[in-house]
View 1 (spheres, rainbow, N blue to C red):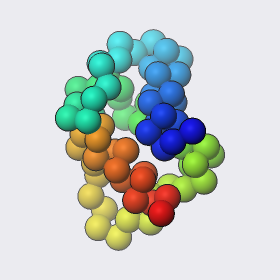
View 2 (cartoon, rainbow, N blue to C red; view 1 turned 135 degrees about the horizontal axis):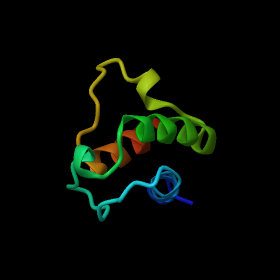
View 3 (cartoon, helix red, strand yellow; view 1 turned 180 degrees about the vertical axis):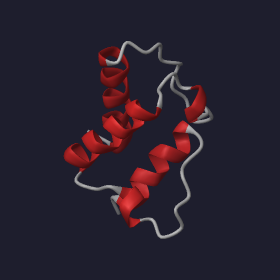
View 4 (cartoon, rainbow, N blue to C red; view 1 turned 30 degrees about the vertical axis):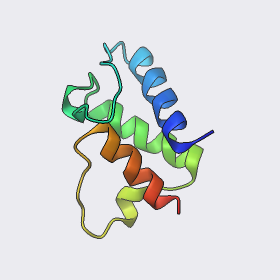
Length: 81
């Protein structure tokens, strides 16, 4: 499974578990408009570390947080190289 597929799956699972209405996922979707809150993103990052074996937020020296869904996926793709 690709990083994108893993991220999308986990987002859908978390949205359902947290009873959140999820926006349609596309690369230009702002994360702040996704329907997820900060708790959901914390859960997502923890689950992705378990699934993908990486936490790019710990490894990123710049500390820049992705703003869109596409940037979020790219952030993980770069960390997996």
